[in-house]
Length: 299
Image 1 (cartoon, rainbow, N blue to C red):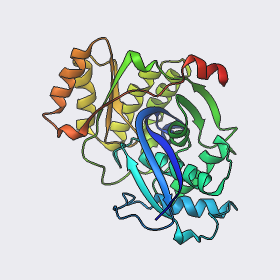
Image 2 (image 1 turned 120 degrees about the vertical axis):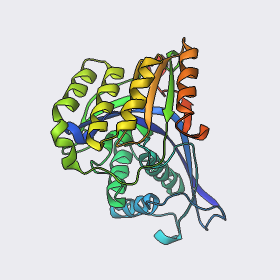
Image 3 (image 1 turned 90 degrees about the vertical axis):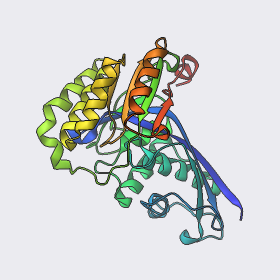
Image 4 (image 1 turned 135 degrees about the horizontal axis):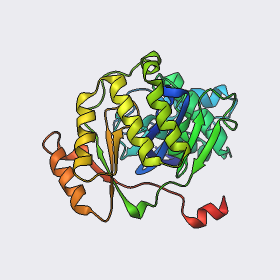
């Protein structure tokens, strides 16, 4: 068994669910994933119950890209090491597809632009049935640092980028995730329509640079869409214990809680409260992946 290509990506959380207004944004988190393309099956069981990686190969071929020399589509096998909980709203499918595409790029000496990678990732997620919007904002957040506001109805990937930002300073904030048990089903697009005005408030907050406020408003609206009473309570209780922002990410069920790093005691209080609701391995502490000053200058 030989590794023919390796790709890396990371998880993310929602700032704005694209199903709410047609505009979506996600922000990168330090939840790494590594995907290796192999020429023979791995002995380890592959965690890809939704079939995202076969959909990646399908999207790759349908876009006229060459497979690794001497291999057919079904000859490509995979190994995945991931810190992203699946089916929680933490963009595991977007990250898996992005890392898989990057592994195929390495395996075939193919150079793709970020726009092309995001396009393939979105196509793969739609083909696998794991996205109701195309998840273009999620793919951007899993490929790059910071965040982008995306018009999900734009004609192409490039024109769809409305705004972007470096993200908050990772040293200033603790990001806690209450992963909870994985979701059983996803809401339909039409479920979001009655909450349009609430999602619009989140969009306006983001346009005004209020990222954390946007995350909170969006999370409350998603809880209303999914009738997630516990998610709303977890978010509200986090504020009582010192959080600056809190909300459900994606379509749930994970709740993302943002706490100033200077008040570590608040983070510990929130962890203690969460430990009464879920197992310790469902309580994750991480940080934002943001562009620093040097990277902004390069851009």
